[in-house]
Length: 111
Length: 113
Image (cartoon, rainbow over all chains, first blue to last red; front, side):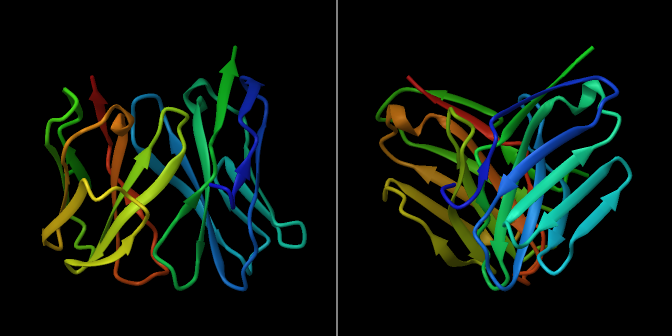
């Protein structure tokens, strides 16, 4: 979507950390999501963060939110080959059903 | 025990035909959605129903008609299929609250020849 922007490609070595970046349009109350899409599969919700939070950690995943710069990132620690996929950032306003997606970042993990 | 399921997974058809895609969720959610993912992987919402009532209707050709017989089902009927309709169509569902997370189905890949 035109409101959510992501870098299109990321190549990372197995075992390294991956950082996927996203910028979004600001709102006083916004949910921000990260979805993963493996080849030929549907979207899997990875994690989400509310805009009054700065950081959220869940096992190998760390989400960082910089409200001033309207910047969201997803860090994957110890990246594995199974992490190769397209990662979508999505934004939703508080009283809105609609998700606005970024174009997706294709992450390729090389041995 | 699939949460959000879609049928068929693949659909190949000729231009001008009419086809339907079905979606069912067993999560007890009140809200369901249809998204379209184009060849560049760009995802955009098409429709949403809450308790069988249409709440989101984006700029979609009127050849596309969603139907929700009950809150667990949301079907998508497409008339007079065109080449540009080729895409992957995803169904999703969420609880009634607008705070709630959307869960996606596996997608239906539609190819119009």
